[in-house]
Length: 402
Image 1 (cartoon, rainbow, N blue to C red):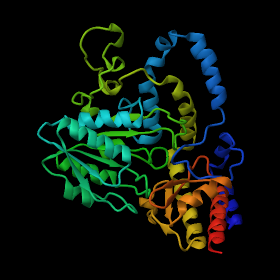
Image 2: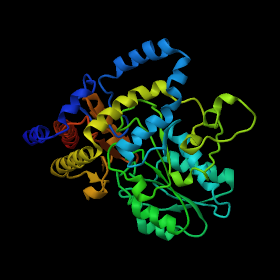
Image 3: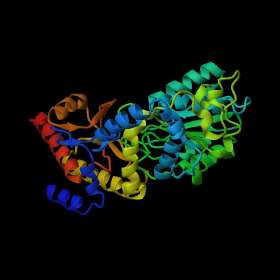
């Protein structure tokens, strides 16, 4: 099996990019790229240079020298490299939770006659909590779709849930637990037929699977940049607003950086034109520097090649799970067209197994109930790494049974 892993690595066109990440001493296999990507090797020098040359060198002049435009400029790069979206619809700003609040709240207010938020029971906790808060705040109702945690939301389920009272549909494109890829094109069309926009959470999609937001007719989207985009812990999120909504959507956090002329400092708030209007506070300039390094790698590789390797990595991991771990339940789709960049496997007692894995240098993560997620980042994960990590897991489980 290890020889096969080496053969797959030798044939991998993205293999040279693995050397462009910082090494992790003591780590045998890093299998958590779907929670936090590894740092690009040049980031320490780039941060040092930015602090010395841009921050110290330009000081406050840095804003007029270009930083003011970073939300749109970095947003456009994310859109081109990973979202399948034309320029002028994406900005870098805030955290995923804050952007989710702003866009969901704005969507709820688009049509006062439609007071239902449609969402699923297995969506990421933040999405559910934000929706619950907005429903209470705006007098809206939540319409829950019961989804299978081992799969995810389907077009048929959405069709049965939407109607004349639907104000917005909130879903994740790739399910955080199972890795299920929702049929975004079909679901968006179904919501539109019912007269409602869709807000997609792309946090487990961006940089791992191919997205076509413009072609799918997506209205709104948010996503983080610290997973497959390798932006670093707490790196800023992005928000996407379809150009046709720019003159209708009014986000609720009216900060000075989203005003049409922030340095006028005048009374009253008139939002900036276009997607800049969803910006609120000061752009996260320093935090964008590591993200730009990650984006450069994605641009170099191309999202199609990244997706091809992601499919191959998860298929190889699934092959090993089937061969070595017969008493482990797969909580992810077997169909590669419906499977994102991670696999979840389940077995009673896996929480304790996780601690043992970490001690031996194998780092996946854990999700209740009893699930270990294998997050395989195509730019930084090798097939040999997958083999070695699952070898340790097999040894631990065999030792348990003795």
